[in-house]
Image (tube, rainbow over all chains, first blue to last red; front, side, top):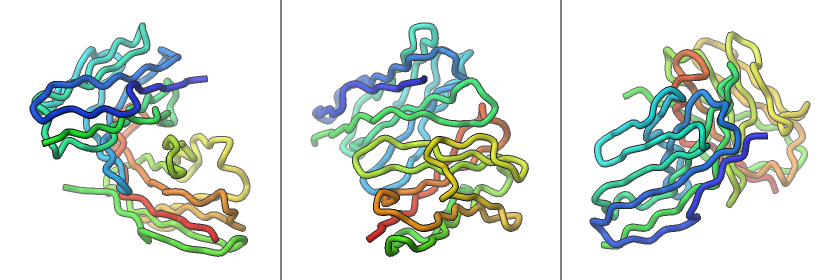
Amino acid sequence: KQEVTQIPAALSVPEGENLVLNCSFTDSAIYNLQWFRQDPGKGLTSLLLIQSSQREQTSGRLNASLDKSSGRSTLYIAASQPGDSATYLCAVNKASNTGKLIFGQGTTLQVKP
Amino acid sequence: EPEVTQTPSHQVTQMGQEVILRCVPISNHLYFYWYRQILGQKVEFLVSFYNNEISEKSEIFDDQFSVERPDGSNFTLKIRSTKLEDSAMYFCASSEEGSWTEQYFGPGTRLTVT
């Protein structure tokens, strides 16, 4: 059974710092991995999608990497800003044709001005 | 930019009542999903839907739940005989082609069962 774990559960950094969020999964048979942002009481905003054949994806100040064989992904945020404060979720799409996403519990990030 | 919309944003119902949560997926998307998030817990998959059929459903998605695409734009989740433990945020999502494409989520419906 696929399990997704995110470490740390919470992180507080000063503005401007670069940071890394971690995601691990137990079964390497995945189609892809998706990173989301969730603001309190709100929906999920897709940040990056990495296909299983890719090693990394970049969008602006965000860079996500994937090491499928070791069951790990990282989300790197450069030059963090207070507006980056949110919960970041990773989700793996297991290798089936149904699109089921399995989520981690998230890392809650606070960026202090 | 196209987005997934959901109504209502908040629904309060009494235990034992039926509720219908509505979603309008992105117009050219073919795959549709429902997820839920109980307060303080992980987002959980409920069901995926393609070509007017359920593709996969979780253990949570028992006979109490049903989904329907009643017309070309709406996608609904019906919960019969609601229980206190059904209180959660329910998210609809859609994706363009297959299960390997990016899923876009709606803002959610907060269901409170009293």
